[in-house]
Image 1 (cartoon, rainbow, N blue to C red):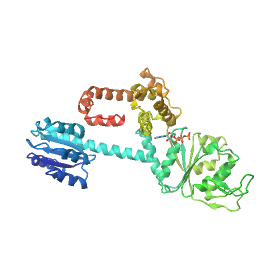
Image 2 (image 1 turned 30 degrees about the vertical axis):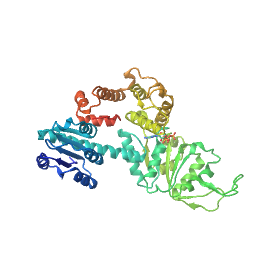
Image 3 (image 1 turned 90 degrees about the vertical axis):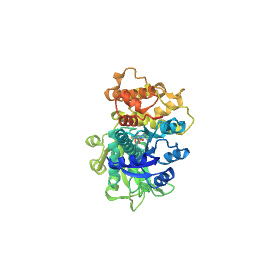
Image 4 (image 1 turned 135 degrees about the vertical axis):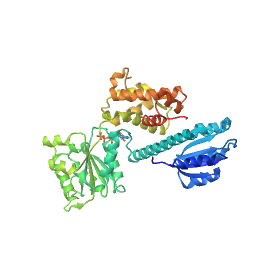
Length: 446
Ligand SMILES: Nc1ncnc2c1ncn2[C@@H]1O[C@H](COP(=O)(O)OP(=O)(O)OP(=O)(O)O)[C@@H](O)[C@H]1O
């Protein structure tokens, strides 16, 4: 196991015995004989697990203990104390609110050893979880399913090179977001990121929009103007809907990709530019090539590093996580009483086919935040039909929902006590924590 170092804060007689057990069990132990010493050690070092040993009859420390526990961010605390100490309400509250668990004296070493192993595993899990969330946050691509994890990996790999990237995927699936992430993770991240929707510019203007024009190049060209490619110099240009580019323009783009120069309309000389091209298309470009609508040589030039953003319906495990993410964003903007989703809303989202992909989900959550009369969003607020029969969900979605339901209901029934809930569900606490993370279920108290 990776995490084996522990801070042992021993107040009173039993600390020495515990420390020797820890050392014998292979823990790397740092000992503190009082709370100020623990604070000094923590200031320099992070401990995944911290153990408070409050010897029999030792007075319960006051606010200093709370300060010490709160200062040790991310450490899983375990307490060993006598049952008398638990009579103190402040100590009880501290344990309930901030400790992984406790054990009462007399010392039962095998039980404590097991407890500490669990705490260490939870610390590892938490570290991994935060590392993942951090990466997802940095890329701006939310999702915990295997498909989005693979996509994030591909993005990091292609970002490290300078070759053109071709992103395929349905409308609203996150192609532009992927292009932005590639730029942000590349060595060009300090340069500009220019996004151009090739399908939205009129064919008569598109050359001058992309390549720029000189003053007087055509009627109305009263001044010289840089094109989008020049504006993206030392950065990245994202050419969305590249399949809509007229054939003549495809030839000009091919020349730019081969020669790394551009010629403004009306110019006599070409200019060297250093721009990385990331292109995207929701139509199948290979098929467009076969039909003679897209130049084959340009297709191969662009398709050096192909990436596919999967449609949302093929990664339904991300739907609740994305919905929660968009809801948190809306809540962050203020002006709403909404706090979460009703179970039926999650079921309705899992039953929906998401033809508009992530963009549709984002818009439905935005709408729900405005429309909802209650604190929890229902299916109607999302503009979705309640999924009355679980069969309509499909097996994966039904499984996800049933799992989430069982966890939420059990947690509610046992007053959100994770230990009791895990016991009722017949799984380990670790598995329950992992499932709670997976379903974005927030734990209120231990
Ligand atoms: N994984 C994700 N995490 C968070 N937000 C996402 C994710 N994927 C997409 N979005 C959001 O969904 C919306 C649509 O994404 P984006 O514009 O990147 O899609 P697109 O595939 O480029 O669409 P189009 O083909 O219509 O241009 C954006 O608001 C984007 O921020």
